[in-house]
Image 1 (cartoon, rainbow, N blue to C red):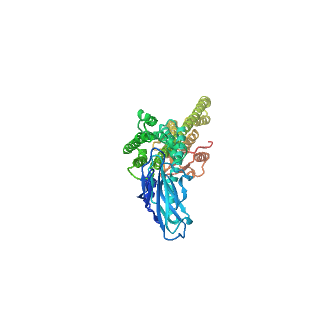
Image 2 (image 1 turned 120 degrees about the horizontal axis):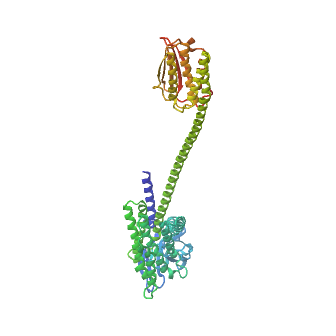
Length: 608
């Protein structure tokens, strides 16, 4: 919806700009006395002829400017009480005005150049001392240059308040706007030059720059009053017509089509052919221009309009943007040809104005391409930043994995070394002590040595435990406890299938859990005395796991409150793991120890 509104506003603005040259004809001039009858003396004529205004006459292509003399009469009932002004809405291209035999002004002496492509508007104050009550006479000499048809619109005599706004509007449209078109084309040429210098591989920029440069000589008609310009102007215009043959090339490039080689040669061949024919003595230069160059230019412009229309129908967005300006320029060119040929009246060639509209359309396309390029660049930068962030995250992850693997390898090698040293060293010494105690029949030494050996085996086994392998450590403990309890005649029921997975397990954590369970089993055998021990793992709530040790022996002293050093050691180890130990005395007898552990063990478990 927003894009449609912006497109509608752009089209309205373009149409308003396109209709600017016709605005003086559409605005109804009110106020003042209209002088719509005049006596005209044509060049070479001996007698004045009365005619109605506006009046238009054909140009003289040979022999310089065609000057027509007009005499107009207007009456005043009395001497004017306020200053009066003469307003000529449109006259081509030079006018000299006299009141009652005294010359007031000559438009050829103005600072703004008139040129041959447009008429001028005149606003001059009528001196009060030259105005008389009754009849007054205005003499107007009008000169048309080159291919332009002469034209004089009906003058008006009135106050500045009534006629001044119309004069200022005509001055802007007929003179200032033409200079603005030239300034706009120079600005666009600089922009295209910069684009071509930074991106010479783009053929569109090169052809646009060439078209801008070749079309600049067309503005030489602005200073046709300078010596030699009038004579050289036909050749300059024919050479400058090569810019029109670039329009089909630009239309093809915008549509993404290939440019034929013969069309590229036409850019130079057609103007050169016209200039060569004009240099022949038998062919007048203006006739060559009107018979060859002008039809070729019209054909080239309408070919560009047709190519643009075909691209717009195929859905090419840039062709749609250029279609309206191209059609307006092509229609303006037909208007100019018809005016020069005498088929329609007028004194303003619209091609100069609508060339500016075409340049605006081309500028919009260039800005669109720039905007799309910046958007693609921003998108590419965003994708690169995203990919870079992903690669950095991947590298960080790989680095972290490599660091963990390296640390794991170091820990594994160290555990292996410690395991071998403990097993081959201290474990061997304890086995020797047990053997000597059995030989000497010392039960106390043997029992202490076996307890030290069992604890050593627990330590050794915990060194090989990794994260999420607590059930593996418990399985190893079960194998050792099962053999010992079987010798003592104690039945063992062990089930850890329902134990939830506990993460963050380190050898220190595993050793603490194994010592708590081992201590619970040892107390059941030593203080029970138990005949049956059950160990099971199960969930406890949503965030804890429980390892429960039950026996059928005597309960702990005061249900676990207080107790000896073993119970206190179990409590301390559980706190280091972020959990707790609960002692209970079931109603049916016996004792129950529940070790509650978090599902994520703390990073630092402390010293055991």
